[in-house]
Image 1 (tube, rainbow, N blue to C red):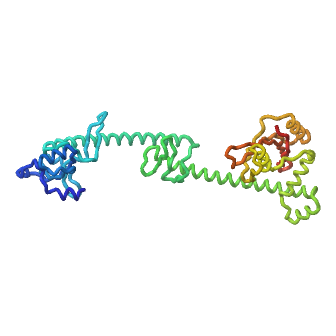
Image 2: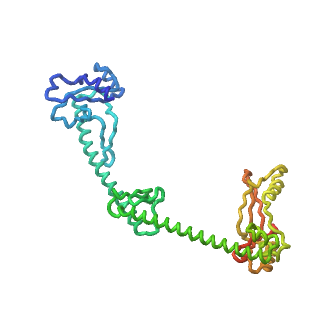
Image 3: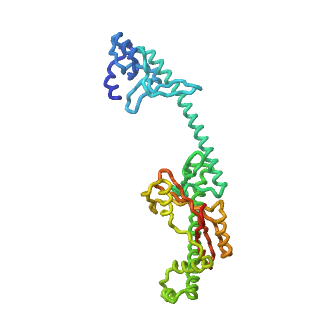
Length: 372
């Protein structure tokens, strides 16, 4: 656009006389004409174009109405436009002014003067607004900093990780960055404290993991020793030989211990893990589709403690509690469904889960109970 303006800059405004150019600065101006303005331009002998571009001489006394860019081009202050809006707020528009008739030079000067005055007010309002926003932001940052520093349990965001000079806090107003180089007051103390807490958390987590690992290793050693002693006293000769050679799986020992722990209720049927087959038979009967199939991968099982028990179910629970007084018995409810069914059809089955503590082992077995 600058090139286009320079290309037409030789054309003087039609309302000017050559003598007016004395003691003046030649200034480029541009404005737009509406359709009515284009008609008026043609009637006055103009070119009728929407974009009008001229050069006019501006007296030295009116140079405050002229803007000069970094390339040395002087323009009358017609763009951007400024106008008074609601609540005395100055609004800025970057478009060129639009006239319904070719304006006179004095009209252009009046519009430029209006822009000049409103621009000063606009800049003052913007500076005031920026200052208020800066102060409000500083107050929010200071409040968030004081809250963070006074509450030891608060932590900075871990991504990105806090550093001694910069960190981020999650506040009700969103993520806020605190920077040692630019913050003042309490906010300046936040990065160092956030980094200290972050490093302390890492060290505590490392220590906690090491303690947990040590406890797990100690428990494993206890289980291994208990299993070795059980095999020595109750295992078969073949199991004892494998144990002595260090090749007897711990799972095999636990399975043998579980059989012994629940020997007193060996006559009770165990809960079978055949949910896919059970649900398949149930859906075939319910939907009348003998070819419907439920794969184990499609099975969804939702288990919870039962909230009620029938007489038959309660009888099984009491039988287990009587035979195994040191065990914990819970009636469990299992809801089986298939992820491939558009309209889920559930099958509810029940089991009695028994947990018995034998040395370091928690041995578990679930027994079948009648349904409802």
